[in-house]
Image 1: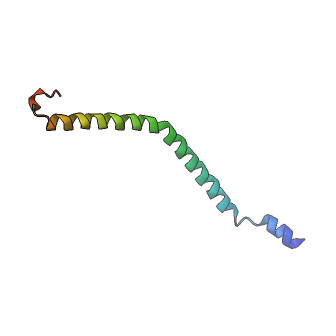
Image 2: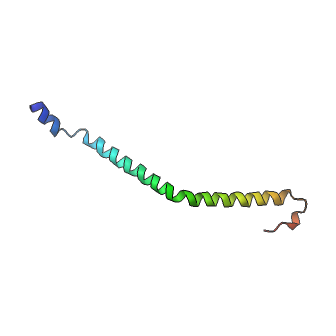
Image 3: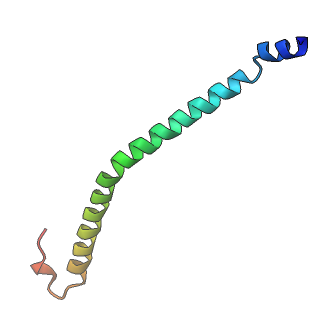
Length: 69
């Protein structure tokens, strides 16, 4: 019975459990923030892609003076 009570009083693995819980919380929070930010970043990337496409079309056009800013 003394080995069992010594096992119950032993706290050597408690720090590991704390770190696992803390790491899981940080990862979960990161995923939550990512799901909230992703649509805005995607919309911005699409707008940049459109503008770059327009600039490329303007640069390769025969009448470059007809392009508007």
